[in-house]
Length: 334
Image 1 (spheres, one colour):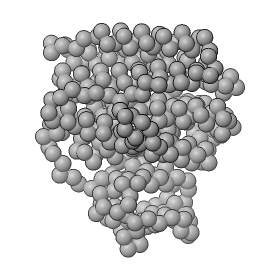
Image 2 (cartoon, rainbow, N blue to C red):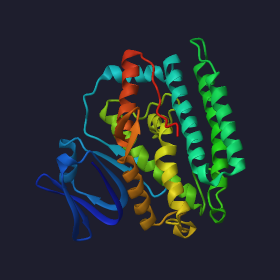
Image 3 (tube, rainbow, N blue to C red):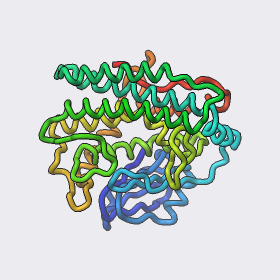
């Protein structure tokens, strides 16, 4: 299971084979280390050396996220995973294979964008949103006709893929602005929002999702810093940015829109001192997203959780790299 630590004055301690969560001098939670897969910290506090050793012994990943939804670092015990896989990943980041996988990442994202606004507009029946849905349909058709060949320039092709993604995303966020309540005053997607509750929620939600994806990437022996589509930048886990594209809408966006539309979180829940969500809203959003990740759904005629789908998609990526097979992305067509 994933353990999320949020708030202030938190301490992680070891007691026998258990991880103990303290707030000031009060114990608030304890769990056997062998039941924990990873710990995501969104708090201020301390962790003891003994706890770190216990985590390493049980291969528990430690992921730190700041209040703005950015991953600060990922700590893990040394692994002996297949170096051949990493070499193939590095090669794919600069060859035709990586482009084909990247195209599938973005195709899946665009299909999920179309599906999401279609679902949200089912009862509202806003004419302008239906028009935008048809635009995204056309974006998907245009992208499908974009051919990738062995002779393509890798850098140029990646930019073209990102160009298609950008056009569809502009359309998607325009539809979202029409579907959310007017008083929220959401205009566009912004990774550095100022007193913007929707973008603050999206940033924070994506970071929680990224920590789930990071766990699977690291566990299966991939390098989170080497992306197939997103450029390699200092300290950026580019492969996480690649794989997260398939899951943003279904897991985070729909959760954020539900909380906004039911007025469980609104513009009063922004801390204007640092343009971040207030603590209680962060806890509510994190809880809802984790519930979504572990909720059941029917996919490919099988009852699974999103957590299992994320794991399966990461395994598909590994298999595609090792066996040079086709990679098929995840999307829900409803």
